[in-house]
Image (cartoon, rainbow, N blue to C red; front, side, top):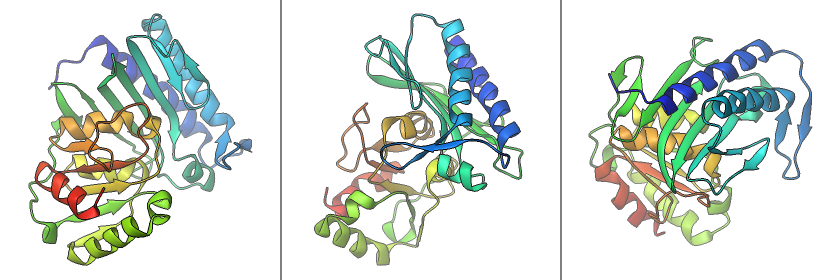
Length: 261
């Protein structure tokens, strides 16, 4: 088992506080509003983020905080919490369980800790993955490892939101050329395909439209499971990242090359 730092203990406790709020509200009645980009936000998102923030700020009052719903506070701090209280709000609103609580810690620009908790997944039993730099990625007391897949022809690739990629004819054509070579293509999306990648059940993930709060925790988890996690050009993940290429070590560079980014 890993050594669990005080920061990871706090993140796990904060995730559980949010989980309690989300489980009570799931498939119930709650207010839904829409942001300028037409994405939904519910009173549950806001309540869950406030609960997370309360736990984290009580234990680490000097850390910065960047939340999906309540914004940034001391965002230039050396230690910055990155939080999406319900990543997958559209799923939550529609009443299906493909959503999660995402909490990450960035230390001087480097992502070092991640908690990804899907409270209503697995028929309500939930699924919790967590990782800290140098300590591995974990699920139910088991250390996680990405698959050993090396050949494109044996690869299962999952795609998320591809809207921006689809607007680029050359990039879309490159993806189209790659697909027939794969063993399988799926579109699991949100937390799920990263959990599947970290647990060795799929081999690669491509997304062209994300924000850092969607992927910060998952970046640490996939890396600590032995995977490679960058943007579609191969650049490191940072606050401005908007795309993902995550895969086993053997597949990451070849897929980027085939996609032509």
